[in-house]
Amino acid sequence: MITRATFKCSSEKISQVPKDNLPDIAFIGRSNVGKSSLINMLTQHKGLAKVSATPGKTRLINHFTINDSWYLVDLPGYGYARTSKSTRGSFAKIITDYVFKCSKMHFLFVLVDSRLEPQRIDLEFIEQLGINGVPFGIIFTKADKLSKAQLTRSVSRYEQTLLEQWEELPPMFVSSSERGYGREEIVGYIENILKDFNKDSVK
Ligand SMILES: Nc1nc2c(ncn2[C@@H]2O[C@H](COP(=O)(O)OP(=O)(O)OP(=O)(O)O)[C@@H](O)[C@H]2O)c(=O)[nH]1
Ligand SMILES: [Mg+2]
Image 1 (spheres, protein in one colour):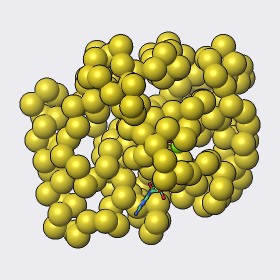
Image 2 (cartoon, protein in one colour):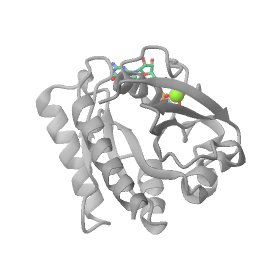
Image 3 (cartoon, rainbow, N blue to C red):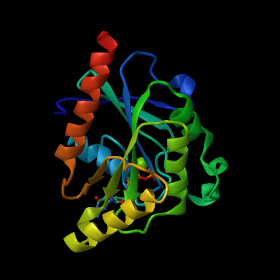
């Protein structure tokens, strides 16, 4: 359960992220997919992360301290304007440095818009996660905009696409920040990851 959520810091490069041993659970995805809204929904703290209808709102790595024991991290979106080319080079350096080089990052949630068919830029990003062995899950956002049947279709279309490349599927969650869908499942999943992290660090 998230009982305490406070803003810690914004970093414009990874040398500035907190230097303690608390693990980072981070959220990434295309600009405007709903990362900041989801963070506010999960923490039940409106206005904690800045939300905007204009894509490209979050430009820095934002750390929020949760229960004094881990960080929830809001990352800038990818795939917006100049960065929309579909090669790894199109992901901003701040993103690739953080995701692929920062040992503080413990788990990454990739957010995808539940209304859209699998987007090439997301699939390429996910492929890079696989190649680099980054542990991740997928969160479908804005589920309030679809009917149950449409949602089921959308998720299974994503699964089919991933299974063309992967043998196993990553954990997947459906969410709506408007309605609070998915909160218990996502927070519960994070708590399990952290249990394992704490066990490992005691050894
Ligand atoms: N209907 C609906 N709208 C949502 C939901 N989540 C986010 N939005 C809207 O989508 C827009 C973008 O939300 P943000 O949370 O700022 O998205 P972001 O991914 O953080 O965007 P950047 O920081 O620009 O990359 C805002 O207008 C939100 O109100 C949701 O679950 N349902
Ligand atoms: Mg944002």
